[in-house]
Each structure stands twice: as structure tokens, then as C-alpha cells.
Amino acid sequence: MPEFERIAVFGGVYSNYLALASAIEDARGRGVDSMFCLGDLGAFGPHPDRVFPLLQDAGVLCIQGNYDDSIANELADCQCGYTDPRDNHFAQISYTYTLAHTSPVNRKWLKQLPKERRIQLGRQQVLMCHGSPRRTNEFLWESTTSTAFLESLAETYHTDVVLATHTGIKWQRDLSGIRKFVNVGVLGRPENDGCTNVWYALLEAKPQLRVEFVPVQYDCQRLTNEMRSEKLPEEFVETILTGWWTTCLEVLPQKERRRGKY
Amino acid sequence: MHLRNQYAVTVRHHILSQYLTHAQRVMVQVPLLATDAPVAPLSQLDQLWFQVGGTRCNLTCKHCFIACSPHNHSFTFLSLAEIERWLIDSVRFGVKEYYFTGGEPFLNPDMPAILGRTLQFGAATVLTNGTVLKDEWLDRLRLAENASIYSLEFRVSIDGFTAEQNDPIRGDGVFDRAVAGVGKLVEHGFLPIITVAQMDESDDAQTLYEGFVKVFQSAGYARPRIKILPALRLGAEVDRCRGYREDECVTKEMLANFDMNQLLCTHSRIVTDRGVHVCPILIESPDSFLGDSLGKAQIGFPLRHHACYTCWQFGSICSNPSASLRDA
Image (cartoon, rainbow over all chains, first blue to last red; front, side):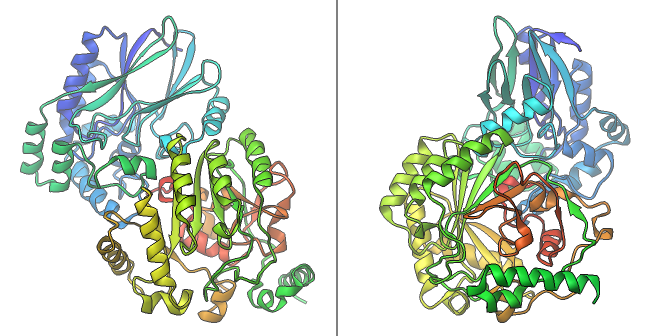
């Protein structure tokens, strides 16, 4: 199992190549051993192909999210697991655009990505997944995921630390002993808090595991200009410019929904 | 006698002997059972439900799948002490979240305390008709939720976005009382999920959704959350509309390439005053009883009931949208 002391972990990129470039630069400046991305490289933003050279040139080790699986295999939808018709309407717009603008070469690259990665970080074994270790598109929200459930994941999957993304909102919880769960957040869109920055997680092994959520600023005006040029929905543009989610809201539990504007 | 019919008669006999006071109702709803039904394994106990209000309800809705009413005592309330024992035991199974149903849960005098205690273990969702909520309970529950890392979700059942649509099903004056209950929840900072049973198969879900959004936005609930459900053809619904047809059942062929996580019974169990049953819909059927402990209930369940067909069709309709395990 590969061993590291200090790593940067990115969540869903959602085609936000400008935020990804800023995050890579920031992580390099912090002297990380390695960078990881937990999947969902496309969606939401413009020009999905621009994400791939950034990840590959920087040597970011990726895993496959549900979106990547769909794009790689040209499935009918993104497998995000929404139940609300409005959520599915916007998800489909995003998916159709992303599928049409992801090159065959990049689709092939997505297809070969692993579903999970395991590393050693200091004395902790770390399992990286997209939604949860048992299901790529499972939402693990802070306010609906019990500590008992997280303990059972660590036990079942023989790991000390679980890293995930998928929900779009960062959080972490200490479990028994050295166990920990961390949702690393996402680079693709702000986290429904009225701020335009996005987030990634910095994990340091010594002297004991330390998790720092790092805010990332980027040129969101340029991103939204490109989104408008690509005729992506104005609802998506509003999210990037205001920091408030306008779509995909019905899957939010009450506490997370209450913090948002819509 | 054909094996399938023989089994159905045997089950009917069990039901009649156990639930004699509700014999008439049960006779109508006993489903046709297949002995060779496919078995749904329990993958993990993610959701633990409690029949905390028993079968007592202040309303007598014409579509209630267990025909709850003020006089239906076939299942009784669960007390705080009982719930606490189940919560403590649930930890070893890694239960992710908890749901409370009835009857009307808020007829149970322990309900505010039960929810407060549950929020120390995980997220709690309570299914209510919204007509008996008291400000003092909601004050207390909002404080309990603020003090917890977990969400307390209210799901309020309303079956039409006008009194003319809702009240013939749920009772005279119930629409106004339920809307007032939603208003009370919103005043206390909750964002209730309005749960709508689709009363007519021809009802357009989008029209229903938009109708409810409009009504609640004009009543001051700026961002209403709406969950539309199919009706379950059991209990009182059999008289109101129809029961299941014989061909509405789950077969082995239907499960080929089917994501079993869509079925509630693959990740959930419900506790009643008798012990642990397979799911909230089937508690009145004797074969739904799996044992007197969570450990004994870690077994697969044959999908022999017609109601399993609805779960197969629509997928875990009882769960919250945030707990979705859908493929897409």
C-alpha cells in the first residue's frame, strides 16, 4: 500500500477547470506528497475536456465517480440518484451537455479509473471512495449519517479513515480510536453558504492525523461567462456567482437545506 | 386445493385469530400469496422504523393502508423506555437513521421526549398528519434539534392541494388544520416535507407538485418540500379504490438486473409493540413478524405480498429523498 505523510484530496470537479487549476497550485504550495481526486470530473460547468490535462499533468490520482461511470459508458443519465422531477430536469441538461463535450479519449480514460483507492497515511489506513465505500452514488450527509453507521463502514471495509465526496458539502467526524470520516467537499461549485469559494481537504499524518479544509478562490466571473456562452442554465450561473444552490435541492436533509437560501 | 390458495387460507386463519377485532378489515386486505416468491436479503440495517403511534389516529382516512382510527387499538403506543432500549441495541447494527410512524405519532404523550432522545443516536423523521401539533412540543423539539448534529424531519401527509380534494379522503376540515400545522412547523424553523399520496392513477405528478408549491408558498412556506407517493392498495384503500390485481406481484424474473436496494426490506425493519416486522406497510400480516429482537430480524424476506409490487415499481417510497439509494 503506498505511503504518504501529507496529501491534498479534491472532491467533485464538475468541469470547473479554473477552480481545479487554483487548487492544484495551492496544494503544491503547501508541499503535499501527492494529490487525489475522488471523482465526478464532469458536470455543471463548461468545457469538460479542459479538466483532464490539468489532472494528468499534475499527476492527480483519481477514482471514478458516478458521473464518470455514466460518461465513460455513455449511460442515459448521471446516476446522481435524485428523486425530484425538477432536480432530474437540471441534472439531465448538465449530463447531456457533458456527455456531448467529453472526447472519446477522455471517456476511455474515465473508464479505466478505479472505484476506490487505499493508502497509508502515517499510521492510518485510508480508504478513498466517491459516495460511500459500499455504493458510488450514496449520499452521506452530515445530519443524516449516524456515528454508528460510520463505525460500521470502517469495520466492514477494514480501514481507519474513510474519505468521500458526492454530497457537495464538506464535513468530518471523529470516530472511535484513530478512526475518522471526512467528506472532502467539492471544487465544482460553492457549498450553498453564500460564498463563491470552493473547498478541498489537506490531510497531514504527523504527529497525528490532521484535516484542514482549504478554501479555494478562482475566477468565477470567467467561468460563468463561459457557461453562458455554452448556453448552460442561468440557474447554474447563479450558483457560481452567489454561492447558493438553485438546483438539486430536494436530496438535502433539513439541516443542510436550512443553511441555504432556496 | 392449489398450494398458493391453501397458503393464503392458512395465513387468513392466523390473521383472524390474532386480530379478531379487525376481522372484517383484514379479510378484505389479505393478499394473494405465492409460496415461490423471491427472497429479498437484508443487506444492512440502515433504517429503523418505530410504529410509535400504534394504529391509533385522530383521523380516519379513507385510503389508510392499515385503516388507523381513534378506535383501532390493534397496535399500541411504544413508550420512551421501550424506544430507548431499541435505540441502544440498534447501535451494534450500525443503523443510519430512524423513522417514526403510526397511527398519529403525536397522540403518543412520550413523542417529544422520544424524538429528543433519538436525536442523540441519529437523524429522526416523524410521519404526522400535522393536526395535533402543539407549540410547546415544537419549541422543545427545535431546541433538541439545535443541540444535535442530526436532522429532525417532519413529514406531513396531505392528499390534495385544496380542501375539496383532500377532505373527502382525510376528513372534513382536515386540510385547513394540516396547512395550519405546516405553518406552525415553519414558524418554529422546520422545513416539513409534504407527503402526498397520488389518489388517482391519472393524476399528473407535475400538476400535483406545482399545486402544492403554490398553496404553501402563498401560505408563507417559501420553499416547500414535496414528496409524491403512490397509494398502497391495502386496508381502507381497498374500499375507496381497489385492491391489488392478482398479477400485481413480484416474480423472480422481475428481479433480473434489478437493484435490490430499491426495496425497503433490504435495508430496513420496523419495531411494533410485538417486536420486529419486515416493513411499515405489512405489519398486519403475521408473516411480517420476524422476531422479538433486531438480531432475529436479520433475515431475508420473501416478496410474496402484492404491496411488494408497489415497492418494486416505485422503490423505497417510505424513505426520505435524502436517503435515496436510487440508481438514477
